[in-house]
Amino acid sequence: MWRKSKPYLLLLPAAGTIILLFFGGIFDGLLKSFGYFPAIGETQLTLAAYDRLLHSGSFWESMALTLRIAALSSLLSAVIGALIAVVLFFLNNSMEAASPKAWHRLFQLPLTIPHLVAGYIIVLLFTQSGFVSRLLAAFGWIDDITDFPVIVNDPFGWGIILTYAWKEAPFVALMLYPVLSRIHGSWREVSRVFGAGNWQFVREVVVPVMMPAWAIATFIVFVFTFSAFEVPYLLGVTYPSVLPVYSYQLYTSGTLSDRPEALAVNMILAAITILLGLVAYYFSKRWNVLKGWG
Amino acid sequence: MKRHPRLLSLFVFITLIIFIIVPFVPLLLSSLSFGWRWPDVLPESWSFRAWEYVINDGRTWQAVGISLWIALIVTAVNILLAIPAANALVRYSVRGRWLFEAIIFAPIIIPPFISVMGIHLTFLRFGLTETVVGVVLAHIAPTLPYMFRAVMISYQTLSVDWEDQARMLGARALPRFFHVVLPHLLPGIMAGASLSVLISLSQYLITFIIGAGQVVTLPILLFPFVSGGDPGIASAYSLLYAALAIAALVGMDAALKRYYQLNKDSQDPAKGVKP
Image 1 (cartoon, each protein chain N blue to C red):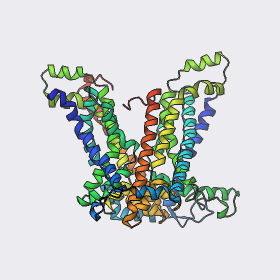
Image 2: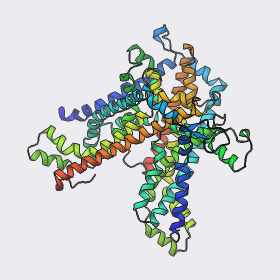
Image 3: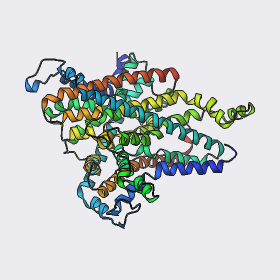
Image 4: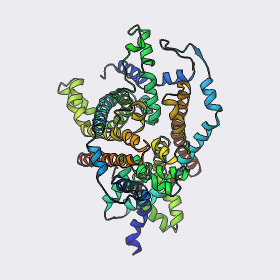
């Protein structure tokens, strides 16, 4: 009896904590999104909040903005991250192993910087009176503050996208680098024997090797940027706002009647992220990308 | 590209500087500036005004203390929860393994604020809002999966033979754990702890919802400044915040290295295994 149930007892504290604190919270939110508020005497379950939400223009605008920002941020980080990884890979091949290590560390610096700080860095760089605008003015490319485009707190979300690109590109590089290091130096020599130049080597060998990990890393960035709060809260505009900020605005807008809608937004977000997560998990298992993730 | 590594490394070096280092320049300049008007690339005059404000304000150090305190408790709880769970999943044949993994890894995919917003009113009823305990409870879900994963990887490289040998030599369960298992798991635990501390330190929204402005961690203190407050003070706080995150990581790395150094000195050839 003890031997049989031992692993389950060992798993109980961790799984129980997550079930209670995390899934409990989601379930709590789900009930309240159906309008179940025993504290104010509402015990009937209705779909009214979802109905209102799906018929409101601001929800769909918010959804479109969220998708656009997540797509552009993940694509941009994917491209920059892959460039970083490939350049580091070639560099490692052509130099002794010692010095690139310090550079690896440095490339990981944006990963350790908290998102709020990264967002503020982008503010200082790219507001109309920011550092980039000052540099352009110093070179005489612009004459006035207003010549610099509004790319922070703009309705399109460029500031948010730039922040994510800066923070997540090193993440993509970090996911790709171990995969690239599986390419042996001899492969390069073989390709040269067959007359391949550097560019052909990258296209025919390096890119196919890193493709699965690349796709998964990009996907992870997409799921994260789709549901993250801090950066768009700091760098976005009040309307339209991304879904997590939209939900927070509804939740804190004061009236209790908006809360079911806020929680309904959350449930839709949760459903989408679960779906995306399952897709990513399926492909990563198939391509055997995330070793050690279970 | 092998032909001119010099040129390539120079190119990489410049890219690196522009991409990684330059973004911090305006942050530093702004924290040291006094009235930095638009067309000036460098501030007209320098001052430590913002840093004096940040350093002399008692709330700063209180916030640093509370942030670290919360991160440490969260990490300690995570270690206690993750070790038995990882042990069970790696060492035993568990039915429904995918379910347990799905449960424990779920907070990586589903954003934790969704759960926290849902549980908010329940926490309110139990008097957990506006308390450090409440914030700690809210921080466990987003951090535990990373600790769990790190410990699991460590367990996968620890052969049962090591423990069997210790058992044969007469070691009971507790000494076995502390002298055989724990030293082997330590690098994994430290890796997990680094992530756990880092993630706990960088939480804003869930701390704000549960702490309700009464549990003032560094990001809570920082936010009003970065969203339209005094740029000098906002920059100084941002640098302090980033430094805290980096220091926590570097500190833990150094502690682990020191532990190995000490161990190596005291019982040299005993450690042959590398994870």
